[in-house]
Every structure is written in structure tokens, then in C-alpha cells.
Image (cartoon, rainbow, N blue to C red):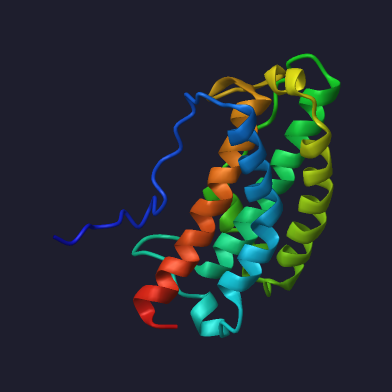
Length: 176
């Protein structure tokens, strides 16, 4: 029996219900820390034509995915800092499809890979320094409601795996 992979959610959908543990938190932090190297490996040696290939019908191109992850993770890093320094701040969401359509999403991927290196270096330092009790701190997302930092780190660990799988899945299907 052959299993069909949902190309939109190759690692499954994020389950924000937890339960989160100290072990799952450590694993999530390591997934976040590993994202820049995993993304670089996923896009290594791709041509411009391959970078401009959608990972699925109707989906973003590989190039847009790389730029999206940089955009998203910059926002995620700022959200962590806000939650660590303010009481339940309300964060500003953004329309990711509109961002992916902006001209900077057609640039070479090197600037976004460099952003991922730098943001993840700083983000990982903060995550590793966050004490257990601080993972209960919250911020409010206007569309999703209150989120704990525990949920936030697990969400971005999932997000890291999710988008790398978009690219590696496409490469596997195309034989790149």
C-alpha cells in the first residue's frame, strides 16, 4: 500500500495542543538551531530554474519559500523578544502570501540564507537562555489568540521542518 503525502503539509499539520515537556522543548530548540544548515543543504546546487519551480501546483516557488522562512523567522525572533520583555504583548501579524509576492522574493536566495544564519544564531541563544518558567509567558496573536513561548518554540520547530520538507520533497520527486 502506497501512502500519499499531502504536499501542502509534508510533515503534517502543527498541533498546538502539546503537551510540551522539557525534552520536547529542548528538541524544538535544536530544530530551530538546525534550520539554517538544513535549508542550505536543501537548496544546495539548485539552478535558478529549479529555484523558480513551485514545490506543488499552486504553491510558492523554492525561492519564495526560502525568502518566506527568513521573513517568518525574523518575525518569530522579534515575537520572542517582545514576550520576554513585555507582559502579553499583542503582536502584528502579516499577510504571508502578499509578502511572498513582493519584488524582494525574486532576489537570489543568498541574502535570505544569510538572514537565517544571523537570526537563528541570536534566536537560539535566547531560546537556550530562557528558563522553564518563562516558557509560560505569552503574546497575543490577533488571529490565533494568546500563545505561550512553549507553543511558539514548538511552532517554529515545526515550521522549520515543514518548509525544508517542501524543498526536499520537490527535489526527491523531480530527481534533483
